[in-house]
Amino acid sequence: MEKLLIKGGNSLSGTICCSGAKNAALPMIASTILCDEKVTLKNLPYLQDITTMFELLGSMGADILLDENMNFTISSFALKDTEARYELVKTMRASILVLGPLIAKYGKARIALPGGCAIGSRPVNYHLDALKQMGAKIELRNGYIEASAKELLGTNIRFEGITVTGTENIMMAATLAKGETVISNAAREPEIIDLANMLTSMGAKIIGAGSDTITVNGVNSLNGTDFDIPADRIEAGTYLVAAAVTKGNIKVEGINPDRLMKVIDKLKNTGAEIEMTNDSISISMTQDYPEPVDITTAPFPEFPTDMQAQFSVINAISKGTANIYETVFENRFMHILELNRMGCDIQVNGNHAIIKGVESIYGAEVMATDLRASASLIIAGLCAQGETVVDRIYHIDRGYERIEEKLNYLGANIVRLPS
Ligand code: EPU
Image (cartoon, rainbow, N blue to C red; front, side, top):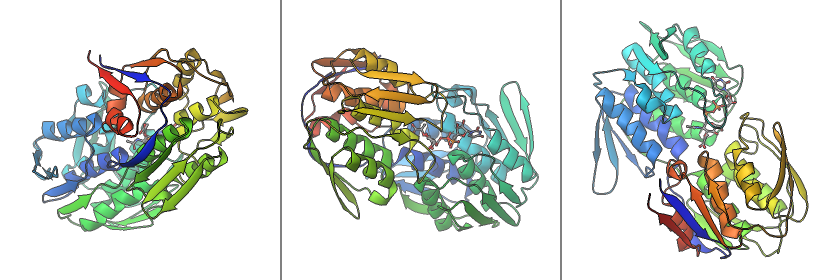
């Protein structure tokens, strides 16, 4: 397995550009199943999860072409198969995003039931309950979700808890359902708005995306489109934190700060200076030690769970004590044990981490357990004394495009060690 060797202590400076957002791109690729024509997607990030989603569509019979400008043209309108096999689903839970489009377009789907993962049990009951309310017949058999519907019918759906991919799945399914679907307690993440914008460009009738109530009026068919994947707000936030812990000074381009407001507010509370334009965020950290910041994760517009692990590192080298409450996933503190091996002083009680800032942390051999945990270990390596080796970095390659190249461009010293 490849590893990253990080020599800590370099301050980051310079300008980098955000890649396309993984969590916007995955539902957009799935949505190509809904339409009757080709779809061209631009600015797709080069990531393992994107490759897996293409592999999944390819296994069902989609044609995927890459042109000289790195744009992907996807023809998913004549699939031969409507099954997502366990081999693919077990490597990427977001495979569940093909469920809504498949039932809406083909009237059937057989999708391996995703199991638990490193950050929590992550059931898909909200997705399935909502599809049942739209008239789908759903059975669980031999580890698979077997779904069928002659026709999906618009109805009022209230999600019991807020779910990002659940909202996306039902919004996609509703575009081809008969009549009006009203989704309440919907997720409000920017990626929901991005998907609604893409579906609208395909001819879907959607209002309210970005609020907690989304109304979709079903249409008979959807057309093709050309669509740009928006920038990855979590990637941007991760680089801003990397600059903050290395007393750096960087500018991240291509990102609308409105998508990251809670993270920016917390960075300001650490003592960092932030400047923003419509599509860039600059950070400069001049304090020797950041101020500690308390964090409670929650769905958008609150502080994102996907930035919690990175903020654990800022707090770990701060001049005080901070509390982090993780309210979205039940097991998202796996990075803490590894951070403590680097000299951090963090105690975890259930969903509460108490982080006491230490004067310095040191390099160690550590193991990545999930995507954002890996990002936090790399960030810790950047501000640690000596060398850090991060193992199992396939997790990072699922969600950060060329991370070591981008960080090295800003002055980091990271080498990818072959397996
Ligand atoms: N939940 C249920 N039942 C459901 C669906 C969700 O109980 O049917 C629970 C989950 O177990 C969790 C909470 O509801 O406790 C929220 O889960 P959600 O469904 O919103 O998460 P997701 O859609 O599976 C997406 C992102 C995650 C991100 C979360 C929260 C994608 C592909 N994934 O996951 O991204 O953490 O929303 O914002 O969009 C990552 O990029 O590292 C990542 C994990």
